[in-house]
Length: 207
Image 1 (cartoon, rainbow, N blue to C red):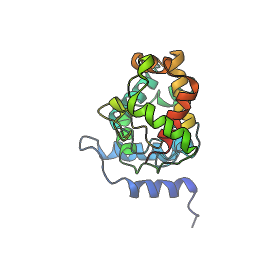
Image 2 (tube, rainbow, N blue to C red; image 1 turned 90 degrees about the vertical axis):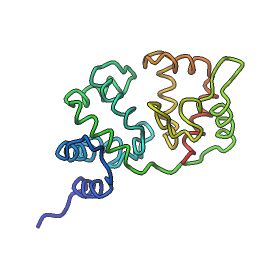
Image 3 (cartoon, rainbow, N blue to C red; image 1 turned 120 degrees about the vertical axis):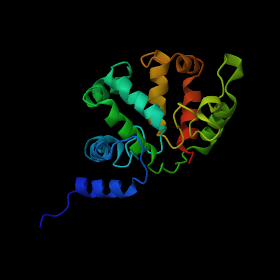
């Protein structure tokens, strides 16, 4: 009898952890999405969406509508940050809408990671910006869209527990307009690098 591989063990664990799926997701599509999440996406994002590599985003507990929209943007080559072009455009190209929706639902139902506190003083400064914005340069409170607990609201993404390095990378993409989202371009343009680092440190520490 062959020993179980790491991928097989991860798939078993992921299937066990997937406690819910959307009623309109076909069971076969759901299982296919789980296999993709574990066997392909898991290489960068972790088998349950808890990436241990700060370059790649943590997807566990993320807003399903947001994830589906991003995957469709990758597939349509309309999300233009560097890693989107280098990795995700190709990864998303063969995905149909049903598989995208099932992947998004899979990650949305996974347990999000605990926050990790780094520089407490930096995170405290970030909390002030997150909750109140920077009025002097017209930067609104992040909480207005992402929620007071950074768990996301509506179609806006969850940011709590996200890698600080990844948050910084995305803010830089918004600032340069490589990732073309008008509201976030305006926000990022108004922030200095140290302020962005503070917000990223605060978000990484949140549960």
